[in-house]
Image 1 (cartoon, one colour):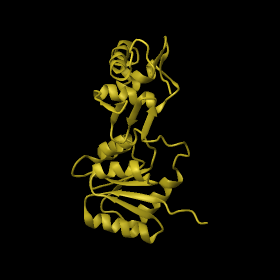
Image 2 (cartoon, one colour):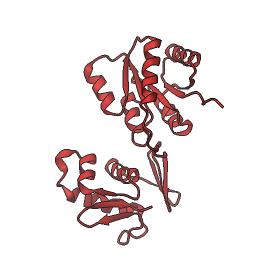
Image 3 (tube, rainbow, N blue to C red):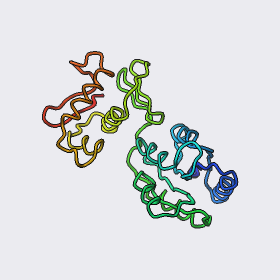
Image 4 (spheres, helix red, strand yellow):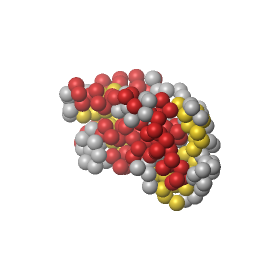
Length: 229
């Protein structure tokens, strides 16, 4: 039985470019999927699990760099950016936020296909993080950035969500205070442990039945925190 053809999601709002890419991919053995805006692209990324994303930066509802950042919160799917922006700073920003490669419009189909093949070869062999995480009554939908406890939606601040996400991505494992502070607030905050204590207390109030005896958000004294599964 032959291997299934790689599925490539094209997130592009310009119909002519989208059609050009779709036809080119189909002619060369790929299965193209299409999204006309960021919201549809994020939804399809979560639901269809494509093997690669081709992402335009100039989308009507959200900048493509934000799409890349959100996808990287829970997936390592390769991302190739297509954009008319040719400044070095734009390319660096897209790559820093999770893109694997960057092509400036207009582009040639042979170059696109070559870069696509390289990205697929390099694709990480590590296990993908599923877009929906569950532990007991706690459910985190990472593709939609929603958190539920016992099917009741819980509203978190951006910092609270980032803190929870760091623990979800390392569920069951110990995450040190220094790692959390660096990843959430930046390298200059590695010794500001009081930040973590305040936000962890807020998270427990929102997520735990009894914040004084947490079921999920466990403190490892003097070291860090663990999301128990």
